[in-house]
Length: 436
Image (cartoon, rainbow, N blue to C red; front, side, top):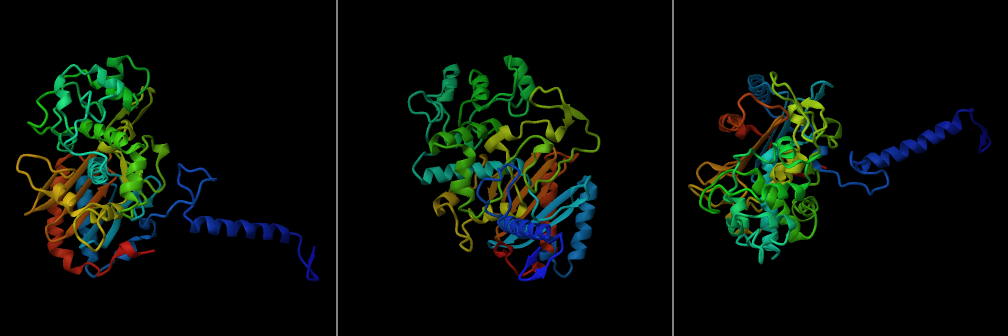
């Protein structure tokens, strides 16, 4: 074969073809490739900014001591992997992974990795509700199940309601865990196998079927009179969002909340290990945990962290995200102008107003003296967001269950205060939100 009079070797055509493939791969990589759920024919995805971040971008003088303390902290709690992020006045100063995203594959934890954020998802959902209110599509005072005016009142499952107090439940009651729901038969979001057996179901219920199994249950107390933490209440809010928005919960949240906030890497979780999202970590139960039957009645035994219907939690606990993008979302609803808020100042004030005996809107608590707190716990996952009164926000995500359960969050919050005193002044003067 000759080109321009030069005799080329026999392997030249193959080399040329390989070069073309290489160019295609370079273009493919530069545009972000495809997620694990996208077909090759789909449009290139928007690359989340956390995928540009690496551990070495957060180095500072004295960091070696923080690394040692983090290793001690992880050893005490038996954590396989952790990501720590620190934001101050809407600038991401520090984000660093510790341990392993997948200890079996010896894959180090990096800022690009995403994890289940458990009940921190409720903060995401609450932001969506406030956005819908600003758009004029609902009000917090709207009834949810009222047969005439309720947002979900015309749904077929509402025909099963026997306790008329359901008709008094408002959107705000659900946001504040004041809907009156009872867990005397177990949390319906985490007892799927028992629910299937009790209702004669042969497969895990879809959202409408789940609602159908719950509507005939009596409320524990009158709506609005007592707070009682309810995952089911935030699941119902997911359906409220779908009805008010006229599209799926995930689509509305992506288009109207997450993307406007600059968050492109949030995803709804899948349940099985083999179905993990792109860049998602592997989750680990405690060392003494045993195998559990899968939630869907398959008969397969899996690690506890893969046994529940996490995807089915929807707005109660189904989101996965990186610590960096979670910080970006908080920056978009904190009232600080450096990152433009996606909610009005009125909505931000409503979400962060302090109450003595009521839950805040989406947050666990919003005490002006100690700051805003949002926690999340699932088997294989712990998440903590602590926004301090001086505008500094610390976020920690783990891929490991702990032997202390929810108590882990209080201990970690105390550790945040300790680390703030020691390291805040030493953190890099930078904004990793702007890294490309």
